[in-house]
Amino acid sequence: MESNGVKYLFLTMIVAVASFFIIPNFSFAISEEEKTQALIDFFQNHLVQLRNETKDSNQWCYDFENNLNMGDENNDVYNLQIALQKDGFDTGITETNEQEPTVYFDEKLASLVSGFQMKYKDEILIPNNLQYGNGFVGQATRDKLNKLYGCWKDITPSITLLSPNGGEKLAIGQTYTIKWSSQNIPSGKLITISVYNPAKNDRRNMIERVVNNGEIRWTVPTVLDAGEKYYLMVEVGCDSGGRNCIASDKSDEPFSAVSVSSGNSPSSSAASDWQTYFMKFLKSFNFAK
Image 1 (cartoon, rainbow, N blue to C red):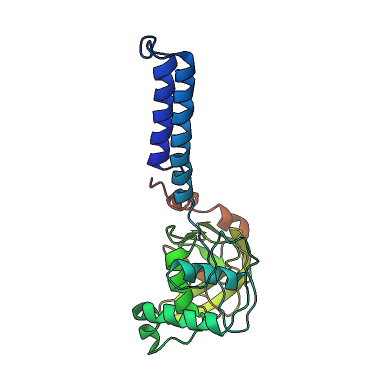
Image 2 (cartoon, rainbow, N blue to C red):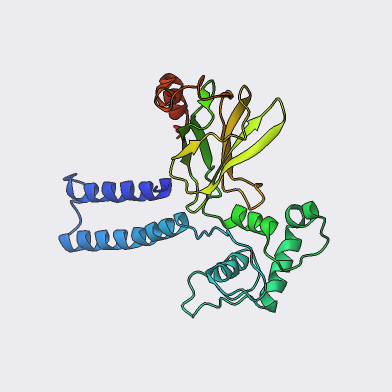
């Protein structure tokens, strides 16, 4: 999206051209050669400003998704050096360097990471009961790097469970389609689906770490008790321990697990409560300007 400054420059340039060619008496005392040169000078000066405006609106960003330590050698290490350089630490590397990038995580870089951790100790060290930086780029350090320089730092990720959304009777042993929508989720982030029984305070993962494609077929397992009510939960981007998810949602109401004889058929369940499904789908879109 163009900034207001860029739009203003374009408008100014259009007005300038109009002044020379559309308004007949505006330049009656100016020769054709002077008029042409004036236009050239005008556009040269304003194109420089326009180029600067465009450069400022395309800031460098990078998402740090992996832990980093001494001995690592990859593109994450190179971008770590760029981020630290932007934050005031002398790595000698910027995104405009023409030299071959250094991608090896050495002792010097570990020392700079420690300095970064000390600079933001209230967010990185103190919450983890650490007094000094250790040079290891773990979760807390990555969170701060992404907060400062991540490509997604100004965009809130979200996920919305569409169906089943509560009130259904799901038969144990039968297969149903779970559907969800998501926005601003980085590529590669995986989905976890679980159920929660509030009466027994019991949560169980049903489907773990699958691709975020908006739907998946699920067979209600026999570990669920007939007659019990369960909330369905969908989460994305969780760590290996099932924590630190970047977005999550649960059904508005619990579903009832029932025996096959008393449950809905898969076809009737898929068609049930379409109004709730449609309204939930509409709510998943962010219409904020």
